[in-house]
Length: 579
Figure 1 (tube, one colour):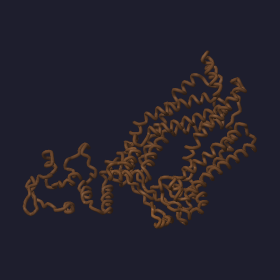
Figure 2: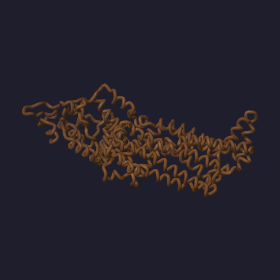
Figure 3: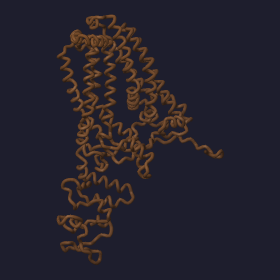
Figure 4: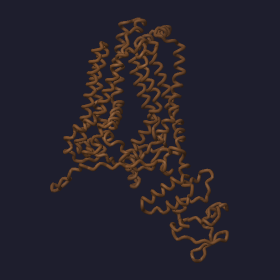
């Protein structure tokens, strides 16, 4: 508790913008700072780990095929299954009545899932190349790095199902021949369930392709436990620096700097869409799928009871027509454009709260950050409000267009009202929640542009060749020597190891062809210096064979070698390098 006589500290604001750090040349990284041997090794890990996601994808494609057939008349199919308990002929009659055939259905069930799953396997090298280029030190936390690895692998595997889900209704709406006529309530019900199936499969695949499984790294939760309650103080401090780095992207940005107006720049608008789009996938999409299943499922049931014959069901008017697509596409583009401007406009509107800021530094907990930085809290709140206004304006424009074109139906009006009541508040909340951590990304860009996190590895895998090839590269050895000299301090042994290793920077005792005459850092640390006059080490095995301890000492600091020659023994490592 502070004393009443203590003076309050001045506000910590008007901090200078963080300096931009130059991008590190990953082609000169030493092999000890590279996580995996090569991109080929990473692709092999992905292939070995892909059997479990492959089973998930097989099940997902089976669900797609069944929903494609079931979506022709979901309610009618339900009654057909009940009637088939007494007579199986009802299923066959329903199948033919809706435009399908048993042979075609069996062919689809047997061929589409394995072929489509192989398409996902073909994309694994693409995921491998993107993961290999990741630089762990440019991520603000270990959690964000491991999530990036997981998301890249999952996106590559799930790309074919997502693409099929997007193209199926569009192809049907523009007139591509289908067993059923147009996209009606039944097809939209099946589409909503397919969307839920894709989200469930995405979560399963993401769990199966985690970074610890793919890269062999320690889970970030275990590192965080070490940082909190580790017994070794040194290990605890090291883990804490690895778990989370200091975010130097202070808010609000300094007036007049590029960051102050970055939210309305093309690059800032693109980053805004990335942040809000990610929250939309988490907050809005699941609710939209459940809402679509309920609304369109009820509409299909009403249609089934009003038209009890299969011929009447096949003649139902489609809901998703080309007129609806022509109206909705430009409106959706305008809504997306408005959402991209939301953070930049919110930053301008929140300028009045700049004087209320107590501390501009970044705190991990939002409650603490909002208390000391009212400007950031107001900008985030205004972003949510503006996002809701943009979405509502889009819905009003859609309703006006539907009324003018005369394509409005009770189902369309119901969908617009439910979107306004349910989806718009979720979009507002998701946008505000995502900008709690994403506003700095919108204004400053990635955290790696202004900071470097302390991690043992700087790259996942080399872009060309292998780590062993890097060890034999003289340019890599020269870059490491220059870095050690620039760091200052006593790096004599490390520099000597670089100079004495010749073309081999990284010596592995278990590697085929490894010779005992190589200079090793462990021998240097133990005080065993090599004797360059002892031959090539082809004699007996052991220390003597490596040229260590085989010379006879003489007076004056000289030694006689095993072959009778004499040479001067240097008194320091520096003198040894000069020989």
